[in-house]
Length: 134
Picture 1 (cartoon, helix red, strand yellow):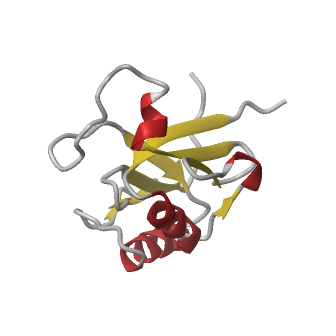
Picture 2 (cartoon, rainbow, N blue to C red):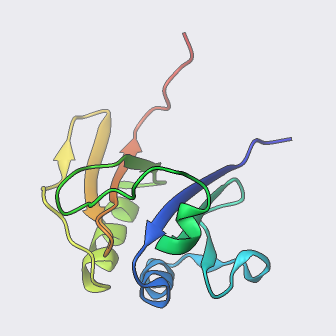
């Protein structure tokens, strides 16, 4: 059985965040979507749980990071091609996200990134050869 990853991120405006991720081409799992949270399906093993600030606070006693002042985490997502990297960044910017850098080509790896409306950073990359385990 493949392990699944559920990333939990706080969002200020749940409907806006749901629309943003749907504009990137991702679907929502209605089984885990409601008034205070939504499950974004990235692929069969990776999911992003969007939680209102109130919902997110149910899972941690710590304060929610002010992403205008600090970085909480950088999420990296592999893509099937350089074109997919570029397309996702373009969709993110068109849907209300932003980017703070330019695409970089390292020969073996192509990267670019976007920031969602809540300030969560997403690094996208395509590798010409998959990494090997040591």
